[in-house]
Image 1 (cartoon, rainbow, N blue to C red):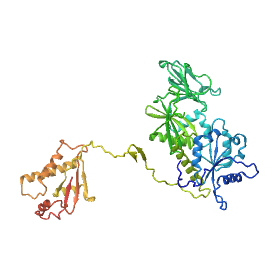
Image 2 (image 1 turned 90 degrees about the vertical axis):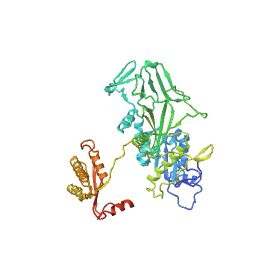
Image 3 (image 1 turned 30 degrees about the horizontal axis):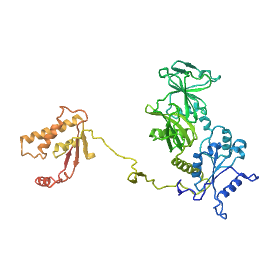
Length: 524
């Protein structure tokens, strides 16, 4: 962990988080918390008034609050100058009424096995702290039926599924017909292989049933025990007791993608070997499950944002299946951390700290603004020493597969062109576009007439070049008729004549009387 502190973080020594409260006296709870804080902040000036601290409460089972990821993140969170962390003792959570629980301004609380979620909800109602993860939504996360319903409502892709409710009060939701290689659930047919999940999210006994063409039987998944996460069973019949979700089996590349959000704009993803393969857990030399870094696509990042917001869980984990060119959400786990990633611990603590300060600092009149940091220059070690890493190449490329425009420009000074310009209202804007067959035919008629006069009288006063008029005539006579949008004539009025373009043209035009001051059209 870096020794330097970013702006807005504490420059005091040890991280300030402590467990509950220690005194048994009859003083108010907030007084006892201040006493504990003074014990841990021994380098404070005793003569100066105590700073208003934002207290972040951690309310969960001890196994979770003492885990390595939680400890790493809390240590970093306490580096914020105005944040103090209080861990609720498990004994207090389980045995004390909520009005005896420690006070806090912000609550990080989440359900796990044995945790009294009802009491946590009551505490939040009583004290009204800022909730990092919504508590009421955690009831829905414990029911896979509700999870899938919310995912569907949010338009998030998930495998095709059907729910079998074995509820005596809902007999219409308990129609199961089992065949040799398929099941029919409430009219929905699932060919093997398919997946059978208990509706309770705490039950990890998920079965995958195989068709007879693949040898039949089923793969039975469970929570990791040692180096095993599933076993094969020759049993091919589905379970006959309990309620289940039946869903289509997604053919992945043998990996599951685990996504961890910290707010709607941050998602960390890892891949692991799928437990459906052979049930053997891949572990490294330290005995930890092997995980591989994963880059999420833009669509997957949007899915992570939707999941975070839909379930109102700032810190949230969910599972992705990549199959058939799409990504499907197959499970939402709620509050969960990445293991063994210092970068994630840094990011998570920074984001949570900024959320807490942004929401509560104005309320407690604490001077704070979102810290800005210098750009993280990507220096990487190589065989030639350390050098900057090329992170991406951005290019703007335009295809060249098109026919270039064929343009012809010429000056026209004949009165017949002026009459045509005036006929179609060209003087209003100084420009005129002729596209209709009748209009183009008029231009062609004028051109033919001028060429005819030039052919009969070489000394006639026609200023248009014969070669240009012949070219104009050739273009207008192409295809034998006027149709489509492949030709147009554009006249631009130049009241002071064409600007001089070269000394040669200047010499030629100087020989013509009144040429410089007479109006001219540019025909395009």
